[in-house]
Figure: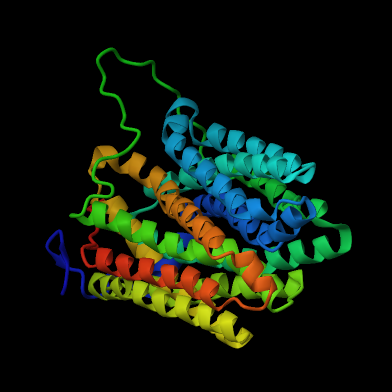
Length: 431
């Protein structure tokens, strides 16, 4: 059906595709996009570059059993960062808060590179998770503050390109460094991106506003905006959609690299290439989806995405069971396309569906909300991994029950997210 906003039928394009991209890339939006991309790019590069390295690192540190919990510590810290990002911005301003996040990120990188055991590695990942949560959440608040709503789909499409660049460069960098210099050097592979982050932010963002003194009797800002995880409404159903899709993806996040290495005997660089299939397909699909002007079409695309993710999860499981790498790659590609179909539209729907007074807190919390899905998923699959003795089953060449239990759970979560998507409605506010 066609959504109506401000009396205008949004089923028809409001502007030309080329005009929209020119508006985003030219002043004043171009520099703002550079600032947001620098922060999100740092998070993206860290995640995809470290992915192939962590299984090797925990193995070298005699901590394979802690692998799911290393991921969980990172994701929990990202949630903590997301929850505290909005108060942090109100206290220090966006530029100062982002600078603090960059410093904490660098400290976490140093801790994990020098880690004497898997527990210390986990502590370093937790510090990086906290800083990642701050940085990404603050960038989301900038999207809501600095750009008109009509440009938001293209902003997410542009960030998908950032993810694509990170997906190509990160695993190559991590894999090559770990083979040439060892896992400790590979854990610092994002150092050039950290340097770029510190260079771009001061010039791209406006100076922080002066902080006003607290007013007696002024209402306190909510840490958790209302409406999240309700069973009705766009904010509630949209939050479930994002949570469940990321929970489903956590199965591959935690176990795919290890299974590819142990089951198929792939070296780190090849493992990285398999992992980036999802990010690349997400990025490629995000551009044409971001160009869709009709809200009705975008809504239909968003609601179909979880079904594609369920199919992708089952294909990955089948490919691992049969040792058919092309099938794993195809499943990863479908998973990436599914996220491209859902991610931008669902985020925008939740932001626009929030009350005006809650929009800043809601936009800041979205990355933590999505990460909470990874946390829940990591805990679930960690328990399933122990229950089905995944490491032992894979090494002994009998992974059938394990991979279908894990990726079957992912498919079930995707179907639940499909049910949640039915209640998410796309609208644009007037600016």
